Image (tube, rainbow, N blue to C red; front, top):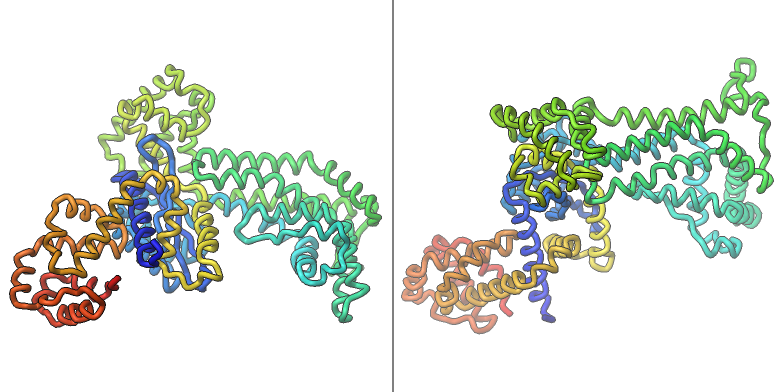
Length: 607
């Protein structure tokens, strides 16, 4: 087990069996894909693919399929990599019913994006923009775009100075804590940064004041003094607390959207809750916010302007300046404008077709004994998937929907359910999925629609742990095998016997290939050959398996070549193996009969 080759073969067997278990669980059922790309520590573009499907128990699952290195990130290259991965694992793009990416042009472009290329081949693969990403763009993007004072003050210079060697002159209170830099893809990091900034406001001012007095360069001193004056301004403090209020509303929703078991109906309910909370903040939260900001400023000796005084808008000549009060400035121009912009962003990010689709899916909600159940909208939902419901099944679906509604309102098993996923699981448990197969198909289609790409983001986080700076020469196959095992460890732990048997077969095949005199004996067992046929989840294992099939298919040809004295030497050491390989390369008859065996033996190492 200390040999690197043995270790890689063992990890490869674990990854092959784990992936095979996932593929077997999917079978011929429908699924969706979640795709994203990122660079690893060796600056190579890696594309991760996650599958979302409904298992035999009615539970929606998101499983990591694999990672592929792409030479460039254009849409066609990503599509080719997905096709190759599907071909390797025996998946059909015709069974694809959903796709979830970010809003990058190469992923979701209307004309040449990956979304369009897949829809061109399969028009039933509904595209859903990541809900968590939409929330991030709408909340953080709109807020930061309008709250210029806050953004320029704490993002541009403050965080940079506080995380450099200039922190030596800070107070003891500050040295026990640190500011968290907001990340582009870590939604909760913005709330953490704002919270720390509010709690450490006094310490930050002390540090910047020390820099302004003891700085080495005059530019450093003037910059620190300018930033300190900006921070000790009522508008900056108001913007800081206002940002906290907005992010506090969306943080729990953002975390809930990134759960694996989330479905479209719950996601829409959470987004509607977010809209309601923001609207309530606009109508009823202003007085509380003003009171908290004024109290914060008084405690820190920051000047509080009289809200009835006139303020001149900066950037305009005084003779034509707009005469507005401070209250109008903070309430109308900042407070209401930012909230309205966020609400408008949330409403604009769903196209008309997507809204109609989500509205139809919401009719499957089990809340209040299926109070939202609407047969017309559910029939409309079925028409979105004409490949899964023909004209005859649409007629049968009408009667099944009526019977299903009566059934769930009579059976106590379906009382007090909260999500569509619970309905699907109860349907399987009570075997009503067999009584109402078309309704269960609708439930499955609703569940496999992806909600967020959080599962793919977790893959990239794990990738950075595995392929670290100290392991930046790790190969793509080795990285993929480790990721599959780590991400799907719950499945991996159940496959001990299968992995052991796969590893035994793999090495028996290798020994047989390096010792051709024993090849017929090794591959004469029907159970080994049958076992080998089931392993096609990786290219290396696939070559070995195909080699086993070839040698077992042509035993008379091997005997004939042996009689021609092509294999007179037995490769008992490395020199004999090289001699064997050279003879193999010159044997036209053997290369024709055994193309996979030829390529594999040329590349195999003797150990």
